[in-house]
Image 1: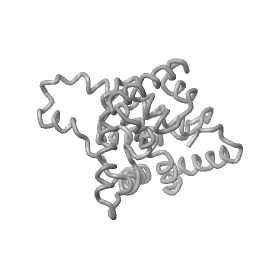
Image 2: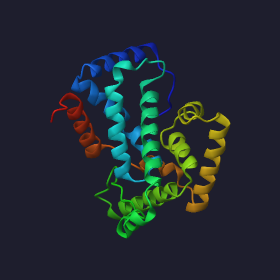
Image 3: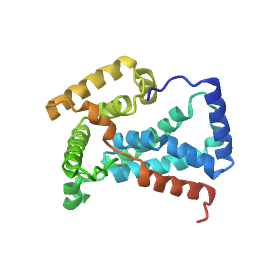
Image 4: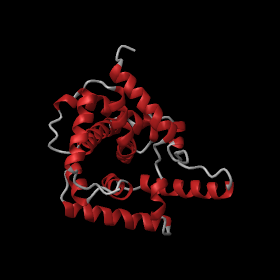
Length: 230
């Protein structure tokens, strides 16, 4: 999905959605969450590199965003504003994580980080061999992406998985467009070398965040925003 400039009707609809969310309308909050969950999870995960840490960062970023939504000046799109908050939260967490001495990290945790299980977005119950092959391909892609340097990984996910424009990616990451192009080129070259194949068309299936996981996070955020006492 390309991120084209919003039309007048889209801007009006977004403003109405924001106004309702500021008033803690559960339907409006849920609509925002379901619209941006996958994009923001993928961005968070490109920085955190594990599902759980990405979810934790995303939840805190959402809570920050909704607590400040009334002050959103709408000089950028809601998608851009939310993405910046998620990036900042994930980067802060990533910096704190690197301050933890490696001796404090358990061997079991280190081993489990080598292989990160991801749920299939569309299991093929009628064809288990095909489903297994797809699952293995997704794992190979995910591991190859995780092995990229941080500056390449985030650009790759923004451009390839979420189809952000060069300009939008540059703005969000504080880079020059030329730098985005260079990092994307190097990231793709590194992936081709690691995978020794032509797997990029399969990228749409990696790092899924929909179905039950999307619904669970949406319900948790709506409850925490609309009923903070519980």
